Length: 461
Image (cartoon, rainbow, N blue to C red):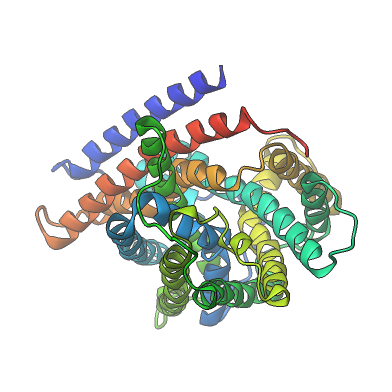
């Protein structure tokens, strides 16, 4: 039943995307865009616009350099040296380009700021169609990330305690996920992005630290005995699905686009110095940090362990024990901050729906109710389906590929209408086709692997 729903939704999504692409390529110019005030914000004052350019750096690093970096060697094990390197470099270049597009489109209408992805979608595709295109994809990214971070936080917390206290009584992994999730019932009550800046900064520092430990630890560990870089031995069909899932794992690592407009909304803007200038400066630094985290972890981790690398490279490292324990604790601190960065736009959307649709009075009671219910939902799903690698692939394809790889390019073609056969036109179409392939293949691969792995998994252990 669930598989049928997924397939039906996927078919409708493909038809919708093809219609959008046809519209983007049409030679007939659409009517002049008319700005429609956002229906999704009940706070009339809007977000505080006091952030500096470096705020955007560590918010973007926190949103992007997450748990997915630890699975990159595992993705390389299915793709191999040549294809894996190409996909890694191509993904970095494509998503940097689409990040630039999002930043430029934030104020593409003079005097108007599109503070949310769905606001930009409404402007590009119309007030009725726009939210249906953007909001489902954005929610998949944000909720999917939070579910994966619940799993990651619990697993790494378990690993940290087991290394730091070898004589302690071992408890179930599901309990550790619950312990990790309990912290978010408190942190989720912080009101907005600016209020989580300290948490986000700590998370960004931790992400750089544990990524460094992962690749330095792999380098120090050296190659395992009889290391092999041959493709994994499995059936042909299973291997194809695993390759598809690996593409999703890589796309999961480039997830910051879903919240980039919300981050830019906190940056002040004037006609003399529009927000895109400091925001782009912060994004470039974020992508530099991204590169020094992703590429060494992916390549050195694969070099050290070959086709037998685990889906979380830190799990394969056992010495020195104190350093591996510290790295796992850093992951825990990082995903605490990342969870909040992705949850904040969802909180705003849910609270707005409660106020405008259900006439719920805004205030502390609303915040506690909505945010606690959301944390409880993501915690339940994370405890029930703790398949780290498979979740990365599924959510990476289903949500991250559209929002990071090709939806910004479609919006750019619709609004900017670059000259046909120009370099911009070719680049955007290349992003669209590559992104659509990654979306379809990794969604299929991730979903199939979740089903396959769940058949042999003992739930709530």
